[in-house]
Length: 136
Image (cartoon, rainbow, N blue to C red; front, side, top):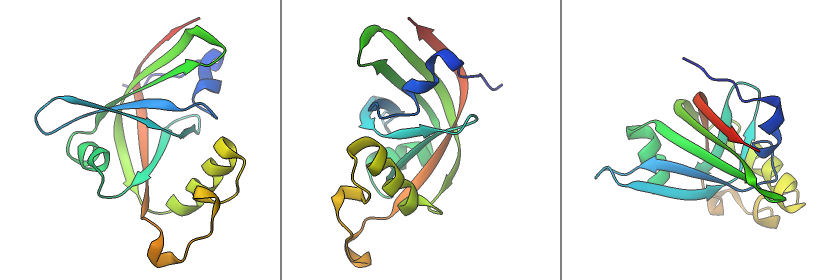
């Protein structure tokens, strides 16, 4: 079952607000990581590096939670529990550059154009909301 993100809280997922991504570790403990994200109206899209722990967690245990707080009102937030439905490297680099511009004002990730061998492989994780809780 899919849940809708209400229009009243979409801005919290459309940036530039750093959100918390909660994933499950192999021992069932929770890992929470600050990440950049975007929202396309259907999926919350997280961009991360292949091979990191959060990547392994989402591949092996795709149930995740995203939490975002309004920086102007600490009582306004959105919690989205969802499932990673699709993982792809396609568009990962371009997405990272778009997010870098949105979040930092710089048009390239890390503010530089690095040679391809020095750039980590970016992967997109498409999270489908299953339950949404909001306040404020």
